[in-house]
Length: 220
Image 1: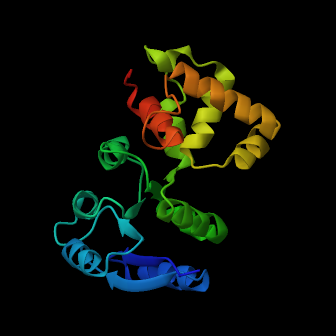
Image 2 (image 1 turned 60 degrees about the vertical axis):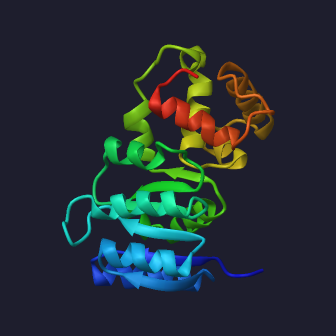
Image 3 (image 1 turned 90 degrees about the horizontal axis):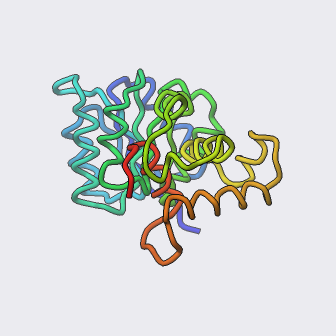
């Protein structure tokens, strides 16, 4: 199996080298490193990686330059997975990132890098077209909400299942976190798809579509 190619963009040299070391040890092919948003975009377009790991706030502006560059990369190379790291949570940043689709997109706090196995798993899932959102962000965005439209029809347990899906958990992971069987998880997911009117004939990844609908609170 060919190693997945990754570009890492982080202006903190110690964190940048640390992430590179973690991913190399996990058999990723780190094809380029960048310390600012302009170099990140340029090198990503040149190397066409499977996935990029990029900080939100980077030079030259030290604002949301990294996020802007990541969105531009997705526009030019839609198949590239993008995992954004942030010092603090921002609903606006997360929604800007997933607005055009959440397949192959992740948003995590930088502190999650310290959980090496979970971080490597997140990068791999984003590279494979999955979605990963920081658990704290999911709790903040959807925990207290009961939107109108199809998403408002979900039961409390379906809400919990969808929140776990938003974090990028597999069916097994959802079952373990909620202390229910995988069969029960599959039943809840089927019900979620039905209530959100996501038929098997619709294009795209239904898990991602369901998560995106819930986060945006937009009836479809």
